[in-house]
Length: 279
Length: 332
Image 1 (cartoon, helix red, strand yellow):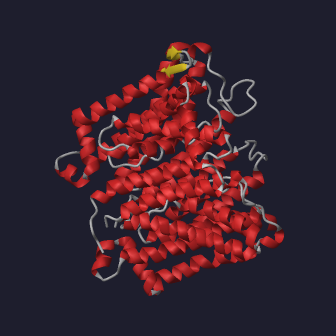
Image 2: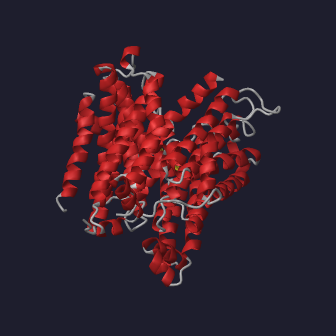
Image 3: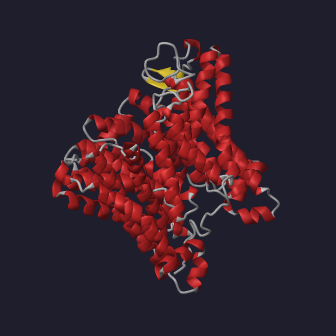
């Protein structure tokens, strides 16, 4: 039972951190399909820098790299006004291409020894606390309200004297921090970088965010739901339920199908931030 | 504002050169390898055409959706589903009849796979990119489960359908020494030309472009924009499914787990580089085919294919910056 609970935590903690990364960006109006790429870049840099500079250095560089990638996303969408989808795709392509290319060139070592890894409970604690922090931030702080307002209606926010671009700048820095944490967590669990190791977690986190109606705590609940589904899959794969062996692919499809149903309006109303993708 | 685009170009080029320099790859040699590996001799040109063929049809699919104001990232999933069901049809019905039937099945299943995204966009205002990303993931898992289970061919060790009977495999239309022009390539050109005609010379094409350019204005002009959205998604999915079916019939001859190698995403790049004239799809998909083929040659000299993805990202961003830079609105 304990191992099963641990499995759930292992599966959902990176998703929660990624969903929070997505929350910061999407709630401020920047569509972020680049989450996958940011997480992957975080993984690679954490592994490469961790092997070189030690545990703390790995995390620090991972966060810095993700912030840099997020700010690239910011400048493409806010300064150049390139479509958010195109720039998100470009971020993903860059991250996926660059990590694959660097990894196979082998000039940087990307496996970590035990002393080069920060303790996992630290990451889990951050994953547990951050949704509540963001929830408090959204409702109770000046930044939180501004963050929400530029995501809901950038034009009205402008009339109130808020600069959407500046608010989004800070929001995307936070996205980078969370993505760096999530990437580092993934690498700490597996103690090394492998190509495309995020395997769609960025998209699943985005799905969870949508399922949670772009709110931090429901999004966390959605992440936990997906984590449970995954843990059940690992636990019961190969053991037939009611004489029927469910292929693991069915379990893998589950998060996506649930999200599609949510988007189709079958699970509550559509809560998409009104200013998503607007300038 | 105007100085910014050149800065972006400079950064992009620096990024490409920088990443080659980090791994100590000679830049000149890398560029030469890309061109030699893709256009060096007739055999390599045939390889480039092979890479270009699915991109041509998938590019048309994504371009059509783009003209209606929709980002069909789901081309990858529609291509997979189309290819999977078309392949099973061609295995069950051998001969030319089966190929025709298979293409039809590919078109229908591809279109059906795009339908939820179209409906959710039109009637629930859910972003088509999100829905198609989800549909892609479902498609990848579903086709994997299908070829590992019900569609698995006899004697196949890996999850894969049976190999198509010889009389259902499309032969090259035209062969000159090592140069092969596949039939699906010709079909691809026909699709592009047909699309250009349809978009520019028919009422339906005009309505599609109008609702993509300005949905509100189109609605006031009496165009049923919601129906156009659904129709555009259906057509786009159908074309993507056709691309999958032809890929099976012409090149792969079977469907297996890992069939999609990112053509769907490349297709988005292909269609983004095309401006207002659909015929540029030919040039754009040629460029992507060249990079794909050249990238393979590059990996043989020890530079990973990832570098071509970096190049693509830079090129896409540059094109988008130039295009959007022109009609910039200045808000604070």
